[in-house]
Length: 297
Ligand code: UDP
Ligand code: MN
Image 1 (cartoon, rainbow, N blue to C red):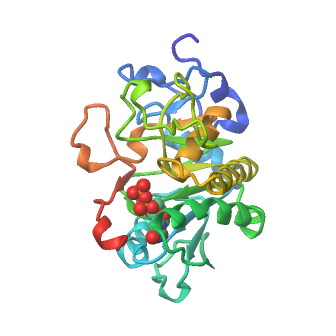
Image 2 (cartoon, rainbow, N blue to C red):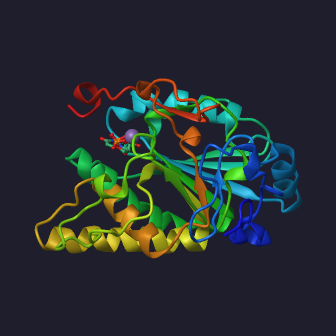
């Protein structure tokens, strides 16, 4: 693929970024081997992205789970900062999944933005809370969320927005490069390697290691993704197995089999614990410190 040409990025359905300017970031990889753009700061024009999304009169869903102590600890800041930075100027519908709807904070919402709360059962193990998201999302996408939204992002709650996360991130299917792993050699990436697991990748398999804290796409694509992951998790459980990184392992298997149409650079979901990196210009989401002793107790 010649420099600067990303075939998938030219498909109008997949392209909310307008013309990409990969030459603006010569120091990073801006296109995958299958021709999907990797979106870095400076490679797109946010105004063109905004205009294209407005023209299509989109409603964009944002799902987040806040079960147990994650609700008090993270949800308010996640929603407040989403109001400032997530798809500003578009129609947005938040879906908050929790076992305690009454405890969801009342965050003032801008025009064209709504919040819906869905009740879920509280699983006993945090691993199960995390994995159950796939089944719950699959159902929601087949119901009201799927009817309301054209595109949906699914996110972890233990992070907050710190910069514009706009329609440049939209595509038929979107995967997030993991901040800790984007520059690691492929053989070191933490894919599930136990061949008995549905999430297993064989040696030599795997394009990038993707972070389950952010993924998105069209309703149809996400129906497929969540069905695949929920099925894999069920299969593993029936065999007495659990993939190394739970739902994230199954997500990585899915994106190995079904290549994402767009990939987000680690600028879109960055861990401050990594420290400064020259190629990380403007983080859009920042991980909260991992206070597992508090939230998983
Ligand atoms: N989660 C939750 N309650 C729990 C465990 C997980 O609400 O007890 C949700 C929450 O949205 C969280 C996500 O599942 O951000 C994934 O879990 P976590 O962030 O702990 O996983 P990590 O990012 O550390 O892999
Ligand atoms: Mn998380």
